[in-house]
Image (cartoon, rainbow, N blue to C red):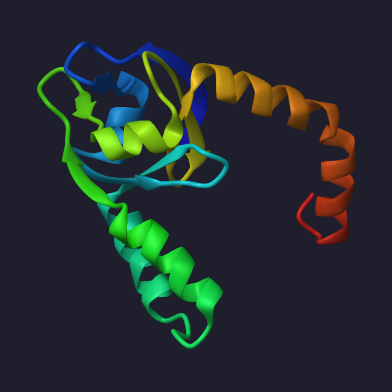
Length: 144
């Protein structure tokens, strides 16, 4: 299970070290793509294949489906960890997420999210203010 919050810096070659605790779960190869809320999603190969299959099954006649599938699949890049557990973040993804140097890696059960540090702090502060309301909504859905 991928959980936790970790701060790391991009090195001069645009590589980001994945924490050792998360490397075993992710595996040697992963897929990185545009995520939601201006972050990047990193999926283990198996999780990515399952998600891609679900996306491929969406009706193409609906514009929202086409747009979302394009964003996720066209933006995807297979990455491989080097011997030090670093992954190279392509420029177009780095720019999408607004990551310059400081990044936050967040474990979200079946994927990692990579955030620009300032964006993560702002997002987290906003969500923390509404935690009770969010829990209540999840309770209404039977999830909490």
